[in-house]
Length: 325
Image (cartoon, rainbow, N blue to C red):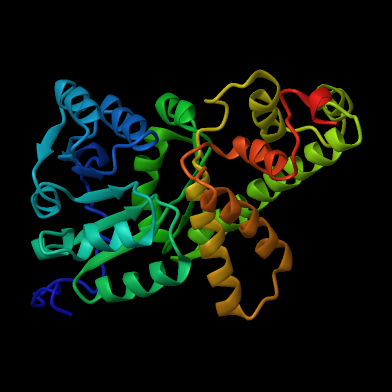
């Protein structure tokens, strides 16, 4: 591949433990300072890690982190040269590959790195990319996240990480800087697989809630009545409560996850199911719910707004259920 650098006398992977060196001497690079990444990066700084961040057109997070002591890099290559470990928190596999393999990407620095992909990526792409990078002394592990930007800022995210045990042990102090729960899921790729399953369950709940609410309104049951039965029952959970914070209170920030990203994740799940030869009709139905929302112009709305999309397609309103009948 054109992006690969000439091999030097270095190990087949970058799982260096730096014997005798304090973990805080590990220099961290961070790419992807969005709603989740900005809080994660701030926690890395607060925990004492030397931090470099990549320049971005949205300056707020960059300027805040630089004011707190981070160093701004102009390119991914420059960031790689200043780092031992690089954390990626971008949208998905295409953005991960661009950050690594682009003309000024991380791999172009030609040095051993540990790259931690905290994005929600396609597991098969992750495994293939890790194998390619290993030939250049670069180790890639997956460490997708659960919870919300609020927990990212508080350092209370959930991390599910795939990777060799020695590499996971090296990455663990980095995870601990921004996470309250860190689970080693197995080899590289298993973290992204688990994340897809996690999102399948949560997006599946969202699709079920949305259809159930529409059916209820059609039958004369308001969202308030629906909630009075489910809340506090065995079907109640924190995900339900956040979803219904939007349904009942119109809290737009209750679950800050765009439906276009939900569709991306469910498309990755479909690809994974096809590659493994598993029939997943429920997954296909969930994907189609979000595909419908995106196709009708609601892609940037957050996931709980799926309830309004499904209701609208059926000629009812969740905010004026009496008028809908």
